[in-house]
Length: 114
Length: 116
Image 1: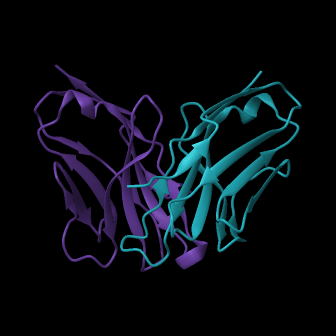
Image 2: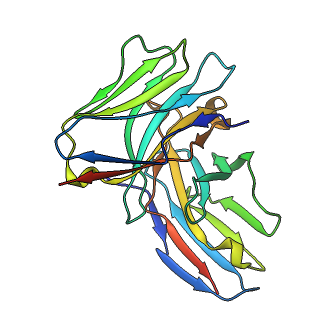
C-alpha cells in the first residue's frame, strides 16, 4: 500500500540558510499535517492543510512557511535556519472520511543545522 | 497543562512477558480519539492502535490491546508476549479538535527495553 513520502530523508544545512522539505500524502488523503520532533522530545504540531487551505496552526516559527499544492503535496519552507531547528520533521496525511481519523506518518526528514 | 501524561520514562521487561505502558489524558471534549505510536531507533512513527471515545469495547490489534478506562481518563497500552523487536519509544497521543481542524497531541513517551 502507498505510504506518505517525504523528501529528502536527511538534510544538512548551515545556520542562516534555507531549507525546503517535501511531503507527498497517501493518494485520496485530503489533509496534511507537519510535526517537529526535537532530539529526545515528543513531536509538536506545526501546521495543517485541508484541501490546499491552511486549517490549523501550532507552534510554527514565523521563519517557517508551508503550503499545499494542487496535487496535494505539501512543502515546508524554513528560512534563516538556527541550530535549534535541528530536528526530525514528520509529515502526516489523513482522509477525513476515513474510519479511524488516523493520521498516517511519513518516515520523516532529519534536518541537521550546523 | 499536559494533556497526555506518560509517567514511565523508561521500562525494562524480560522477553515474552506482558508489558503495560501507562497513559492518562485530559480533555473536556466528549468526542476524542486516542492513539499509540511506536518509534524505533530508526525514527519512523508507526501507528499501533486507536481507541475512539465512544467505542464500547477496548481496541485490540494483534499483540496490542488498549485498556481504556474512560472514567479514569486512562488509555494504557498492553503488549502481550513481548519480543526483542518491541524495544522502542512508545508515544500515547490524543486527537484534539474536530474534522479538518484536528491535530495530534503527544505524550513525552516511554522508552521500552526488552531484555533477552
